[in-house]
Image (tube, rainbow, N blue to C red; front, side):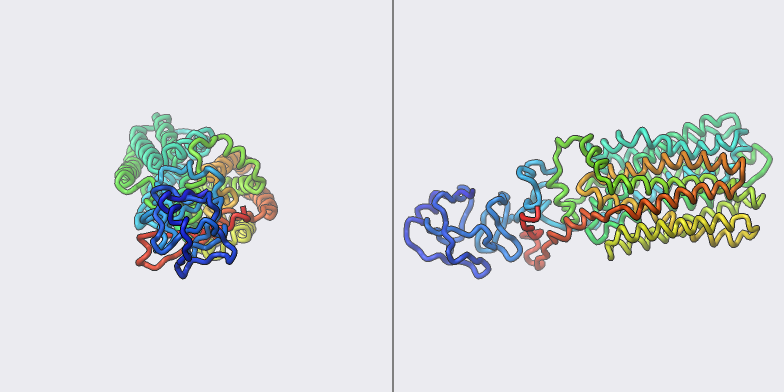
Length: 563
């Protein structure tokens, strides 16, 4: 109910013809109920007079893009029309999508900020800095496995021990996901970015204390610290994309964020075989290893400083309608566990968690064991083994960027995900059949084709999950995807490693093909319930001329009947 100023009630006692602006329409039979009133601080334009027997129809359009409804509360700072001001310099808040009382639960952004849909110039700097320290962390994950035979010789340990330098990343993630996801919700992006980059830097410097053959536990400690940093990194891409980027940029931004992680893996395949040659002299080998450790320590330190300077919590204004509504619907008292329960009740999301884990787990196993597989068929080709890994990841980065751009334009999440998954299976089958042909150039081609689809699938899974679970936390949905990937990654790495040792590379790769087939079948049953797209499409942003932009920038109010 709207309250009217007492002075305006007195004006209503006299019979006067109502003068209305051209943009305001009223029903012929409209009449104002005597009980209708405006708050004392609300001013009505002099050209408008109120008659006791005249009421404005509930659906009267007060502004070309704003529909006022009795159940919609008008925010204290809403500009309804240039000539009829309810309060100076304000705009209607998009509360039509929010449940009753949701406006009281707004996040830390002010109402004025939420009314303006605008992207920040800082957004690309934020995503690029994140991409860089994610790259540094991913490099440290694969730097041992890409030259596993050399580290086995240097530390005098088994292949399985070297595999654990990779698998510790997977194992650490599983118990730490929920605490880190809670920290992300509680303290926000900047705090998580600082912790992730700081731990990544610390782990890199700890490894410098392991340059003696008997200090394998120290290098394991440094790797475990880096694996903890990874927990603060892997769930961030979709969250950064949603918080900082507009509706037509989110998939591309997520691809850029994931791109850094893939680039780090690519460099991890390429650089260690070059910096650390396969030599017998332990002292010279320790020297070459120290060069690699010093370089990565310096890079990690520089990136930590950049995070401190560049990374901000969130932009001043929400970049999309969906993000604005996400702020409005967010409840500070919302149960953290209830969010997890809702996610697991979402059947489509649960199916995606399984299929994503199968695909990403296969990629983790393939990356960890690639050096061992190539060396078995092509002895002495450590450098080319690293280059094959580089080819897989570079092709995957290209696939990720193309798929991200395609999703932003087509919004065909289900179809794109299914096609990429099926092509991943085809690529894995071809790679399996060509690995032992004694033609290394053929392996480069088939491995690159496999990587284009297998690695290119990763950002697709993140964005599809956000669509299926909106408005739940992006950090939580992507975190659960990553937990699935780590679990399957550990299972596949151990199982395939044992199969390779006992039966050869082809049975090991066939093992992965079977599970990729299962993942493709399950993907076909996921329903494309694109909730975030619905939030953006049903209530698209209103674009006003430049001269009105500073006054108000309103998202068009949606019909309440939809909700």
